[in-house]
Amino acid sequence: MTDRAIRNLAHLRRSASTARVLNLLKVATEHGHELDWRERPIFKTPALNCALIIKHRLRRDELDAFHLRRQVATKVVIPIDAEDLKTGGRFVFVDQRGFERMMQEAFGLESEHPDLQTLRLMDALPSLDPFLLREQLRRGGVEPAPCYFSISDGDLIRMMQFVESEIRPLVTLSLGQDIEAVGSTRRLAGKILSNDPGDRMEALRQTLHLKPEEYQEGIFCWKGFLYYKWVLTSLMDDIGVVAEAVSSVKPIGKIDRNAREYLDRGRHVLRDRIVTVCDDASRTLRIYDDAYAALTQEAKPGAFRDFLLQAPRLFTRLGEQLGAIQHVVSFWRFRFSPGAAPVSVDELIDVFMDFETGLADRDQELSRRFLAA
Image (cartoon, rainbow, N blue to C red; front, side):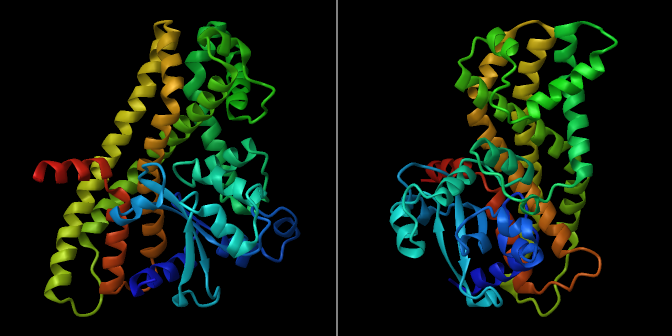
């Protein structure tokens, strides 16, 4: 690992989990003494259960590590010394070429080991938001201790209230303007957020003429859309604050000409990319809004059926966009909170580079290079 990578790893050691990072080392440090953590680990392999799981935007020289083209990969970092992350760490990408052989050589895990299944469940998600991660693992039959998911009771209540308000038009369409609709809305919201495979809201599935597996996957992604819509709504004020703070934050220490030029450029680029990614995410969410409105206001179930069929692809794109924004906001809160230590020139450059990479649109970058050539 390079010195810069080591410094970033040390920063991750101190920070909490975000949409882009699952900090199992911090979870182990804070909850390792608890019986629930020991009896219900997220990974059975001790080294993996203290790893850093990172949604990593692939660089150009990393693309060939995979059989299929992708922009974001799940990176598993095993610290060499958990007490001193400046010593670096070893890492592997989930399902890179030779992945199973590497896991067998490093940890003795056979191809059917449940820890590999858990890693692949994580890899199938576009981000590591605790709410969606918990739901995804439950779908795969994995139910770790609650300490792995930093979801507050308040957030769960607000999320449920948001879902109830979103699906009220669907309940009204089904039941009419009934005084009991509030209770029905709450029950339907619970079903949408439920992971009980035996309850698939058969009436809606049959109305949409979807196969059970298509419906199950589409409903999970619908849940993801509802969650991400709530996230974007909840983050709008914080996004504005961070965008302004990026323009004014100043490091301590001497700044040479190259560093000053990079930071000045980085301030403008980051502000533009934050706005662009938020706009792109909003446009993706409008695809769902339009389809849902066609179902509930125009009685056209075909549009919502089409949405559910394409939802897995849209969900991945939306998750990558909002995961990058959530990471920027949550890490900024952590590193630049009141009372935090001043940031050095090198560290601020690291932060800007990390944010810029996470917010980059790889398809746009490739198109620009093609046109320039």
